[in-house]
Image (tube, rainbow, N blue to C red; front, side, top):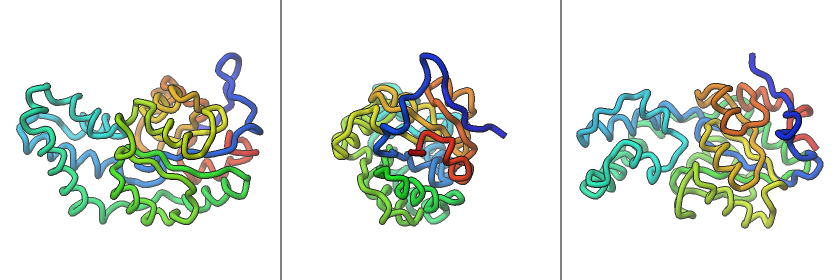
Length: 237
């Protein structure tokens, strides 16, 4: 089973005593929702005439629509029906798949442990604002989160750094003051551009190698494993 390990040499994280906040991704990190998002995008793309398989769509989950759609649609197709397709995807997800979303094990316990350790808690998600608010309710963590940022708050979604930069601004912190926790290479890439060290989790379906190549310094199977190994993680004071 993959375990968290500290970096070494030039890749070593800064002293964890300096960390003041933990910034969590949501989809695939705290909630078991990646396959459901992939289904909605796959169905939307096929409905609008694009031969994109489920696995192809799944590999792009973690990005916002502003990044995912250009990956599959030409500029002409984007102008013609990109907005309509994204709206259809949103309605499809909310009606068919959102009711099926469940949190991963130990999510509230992990966030309480983080808070008890003296770190502030933020979420930085490529989801829309209304989706994000629902997610916090599903995860049972609304009262544990100090700051939230969604794709509605920024110009560009992950892997651009905008979402993390917006969170840092709300927290009044610099990048090295925080640790990001995410399940996709796009989380690590975006956080790295904002000078934030990233802890990866495998529960979103990406491989350990892909997460480490994107910049994750530690990798754990999921929230429960991160909680169990908390004292050895970058989240420990």
